[in-house]
Amino acid sequence: MVWGTSSGAGKSWLATALCRSAARRGIAVRPFKAQNMSNNARVVAGLDGRGAEIGAAQYFQALAAGVEPTVDMNPVLLKPERDTASQVVVHGRVDAALGRMGWRERSATLAIAARASLQRLAGTCELVVIEGAGSPAEINLAPQDYVNLGTARQARELGVFDSLLVTDIDRGGAFAHLYGTWALLPDDLRGSLRGFVLNRFRGDPALLEPGPRDLQRLTSVPLAGVIPMVRDHGLPDEDGLFDAGNPDAPKAGRLRIAVACGPHISNLDEFEPLRRMPGVQLAWARSVAELHGADWIVLPGSKQVSGDLAWLRRHGLDAAIVRHAAAGGAVLGICGGLHMLGESLVDLQGHDGEAGFDGAGLGLLPLATRYERDKRVRRSTLRFGRTSSAWAPWSGLEATGYEIHCGVTLPHPDLPPASVALRDDLGEAIGWQHGNVLGVHAHGLFESPALLRAMWGATAPALGDTFDRLADLVDGHLDRGLLDRLLSRAG
Image 1 (cartoon, rainbow, N blue to C red):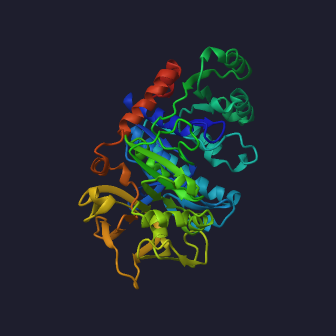
Image 2: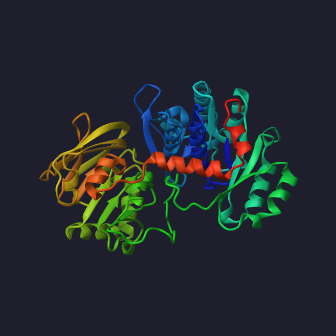
Image 3: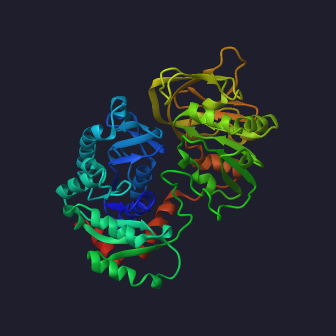
């Protein structure tokens, strides 16, 4: 199990790296996280074989392990809709009743789902790499913490159980974070700690002494390794914006793509390939000034479209996007972004997050969207029709993608129709174009080598190479003997 001293300490990438390192050793390994809180989700097969959702981090960890992702790898997914509420997804399906309950009240039910998944998963492999959530030392939450403490105790029942504790030394206070977390761990779990990991270190490791030695004297836990600062490890961040505020972000390239980032943005991980494309500069825009000079403006997915649309208007981005389109600039809307591009949006029951919304979109596509209770969650093969203008390179191409939305979008009955640009494998229209404005319901287009090559004549680095680089990091910087023991068939 990979625990962290806080969110953002490096649990996700370290768990991914351990999955890859184990797989390269010939170990049948599976990832697991009892509960994820993220609006970055992927579509996998549910327990009934139909499309279901899990967090993107476990999806990528499964790929690193060389196995098909399943809902048992992330049985509970919380998708924040606002500061005080989240949509609750259990085994890939929304459970509205649990979503209306308080966190403590629903934890027992969620724990049962998580235990069932770990039990099934452990029976399919030789090793499970478990990612913790936040910190295991949140003593105010400990009685209900099935994600860290409950999972650890169940894993101990199932077989040999070991844990690592990772901290982000670049934030400062790393030794205090490690010692404090160790001290607050329950007595029955503290002994599972096999090593501390210092992540994102820059400088001379010799300067760390006598810190590691003193920490081991206090805790009897050795320093398992020091991971150097790697600014571009190739995995998207689980939450938030990668490269936000990073002074080393890519300089201006051949094509500047600005992604308008409202407060409820989702599925940002699908833009990671663009960030790594030669000749492309990817920028996150939260002001009109940050849209300036963009060749493309992208409206991404949203967990609450009405809220993000209102945010665009409060900050004047709506008018800037309309001006950009009127001047011939390319605009792409994905999922919730597609809904915003239309003429109208209706959500009287609050299926998108806030009840009572019935308003106008940006009016750049002659479409109307109505939100319904049932969410469409599926993977499919996509085929572009005859596209033109900025999107001409994608004309007639096929790609794979996925849909996660409760909005039903149709041509507006009172307006001339836009041309259908994209259909799924059922032949249904899921994308429309008008001039340089394109809106699609499908996520994952930029993960298609064929679409990247058609648009830019190049592709992003392969995911397999990214996983191998991460595995090389842990193989080269964690104690080799400890790593051999942790990743062996016998634990």
